[in-house]
Amino acid sequence: MPSMLKMLLTAGLVASMSVAVAAKGFASAKAKAGGVAKVDPRGQVLSLSCSGCHGPDGKSSGVIPSFNGKSPEYIEAALKEFKSGERVSTVMGRHAKGYTDGEIHLIAEYLGTVGKKTK
Amino acid sequence: MSTNISRRDFSKLLATGVAGASLGLFGGVGTAFAAKYRVVVIGGGFGGASTARYLKKLDPALSVTLVEPKAAYVTCPFSNWVLGGLRTMPQITRNYAKLSGRYGINVVPDSAVAIDPVKGTVTLKGGRVLGYDRLVVSPGIDFKWSAIAGYSQELSESKMPHAYQAGAQTVLLQQQLHAMNDGGTVLICPPANPFRCPPGPYERASLVAHYLKQHKPKSKVIILDPKEKFSKQGLFTKGWQRLYPGMIEWRGPAAGGKLISVDGSSMSVKTDLGDVKAEVINIIPPQKAGSIAFTAGLTDETGWCPVNPLSFESTIHKNIHVIGDACKAGAMPKSGFAASSQGKVTAAAIIRLLKGQEPVQPSLVNTCYSLIGTDYGVSVAGVYQLSPTGIIDIPGAGGLTPIDASDDQLAQEAMFAESWYNNIVRDIWG
Image (cartoon, each protein chain N blue to C red):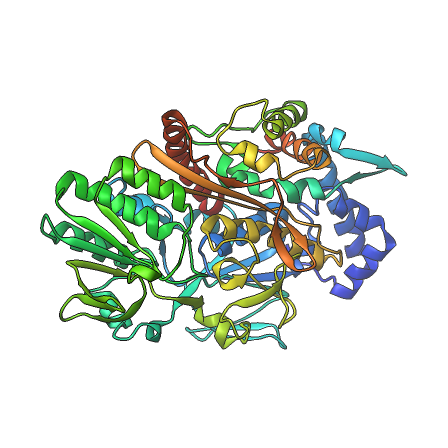
């Protein structure tokens, strides 16, 4: 049913575009390639565990800090400082040491968009 | 939204690249196409509920069904806090209202009794048959009742609770602690490795001692352990000396730690160094994967389920993923945090696999807090990578609270433990 396919495809594109508009922060995580935006899917997968302590979408309840709404630059600097020990922590240094600087960059870019994606 | 697109048409569309680009943009968020795909999750604990929640979060158009017989789920994490008098049972009880109401997950209050990996169906106790494109099995643990002579499920429900699946068992153990006399002995008998929540028995000893110190200060806690060493041993030992001097005694295998048998009528256990009597006896039996994993043939000779660590897909049956305590996850411990981490990684992998894409190299993480006393918390963290031998620790990352941590740091970790619990249960059950 080709017409149905076309309709759904258009709907899918529109949905994606509206998400894109809502998530301006994603711009830094995208590399333009032939007019099609691509996101490195590793950013998301590397970041999935963070909410296990920091709460859904990085909105924490209690003394663990929230990262929701923080910029990618802030998150990247914080993670690198935890990793080097420059920033004193209980457990974050032990986590941050598990990631390369490149991975920290991807995590920060992904998490830096979270605050803008949630309602 | 109902569609008439067949999966073959969909694949063709993907192949043109046009749809692929739009789908790939944000990991396929909100595509109508994915509604065709049905993912069934068996088990609503830390692993299963995380998978269901993150499948819908990462791709709201997927059809996600969560099969869980219990209307209320009592978390094992923080059940030791209940024994210590620091939490109530309602405070550690979760339900599925938000997963079904707010997140659009089809929560089915039933249990899975059979899986047909060829047809791709799950049969429920109530008779319903659910078809799936991908199945996630997160059944947690079952006990090897016959591993300890004299022990049985009946005895666990009457006189010697395991309290290692939280709920009625936690309440029974708490009632026994409340009923015992000052000056009595509490026995805690953990199993050999591997088992659920490696620091759990030792946090339990700590928080039981916390309760006894206030209400029955002449009492004692004895741990009979078949292991030479245990999780966070240095930290626990130091904490016990500081907070509960003389109250907690750990006996390893050379000191009569290995159980030979138990006897409910005399409330005693037999070890190679003689009998030990106690007013409260907590037997934590050796464990194996939850029963549906066995019924479905997902286990190997170890009693646990081998999986491909990239996607947690069973290496025995295609299109079935096994996560949490039931799976063999290499260096990752059997913890609620690890199960949740695996569940999220599996959700992301399933979404890619359904689109015909390879799963992305995951980041697997564990964080386990243990409370030794109020204002006295310790933790262990792990970050893992995949290697040809499976899931291994990333060298230099993770590890324990330093043994010389300051009082401030220990107090901070206790507060973090509390915040962690509140955050992870909201992350999973909403």
